[in-house]
Length: 118
Image (cartoon, rainbow, N blue to C red):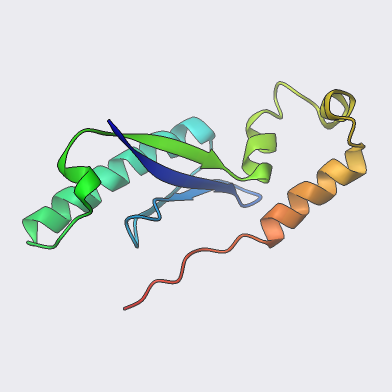
């Protein structure tokens, strides 16, 4: 079974995701679990709509595939914030809390979505 990469980011208020292999296929949600559900639906809709409009789709979608979620640093830290506090992460990783916060902010600042060509 082939894998399709899905990039997930946390933007301060919610999660956003896109499948780089499908330009324009994006979704947002308030939680990581909702995000995974939403992007699965968005990909299915995108593929079905493309086929209905006789547009080409990547080969991977012509057979069985599974989604592989790749979380940004901020999305990962936010997803586990109910389980690990910054203090706990600091003790586990050896990175002080300020540095962890800086990493999260830097990751958010570096959020770059792919260029969509018309």
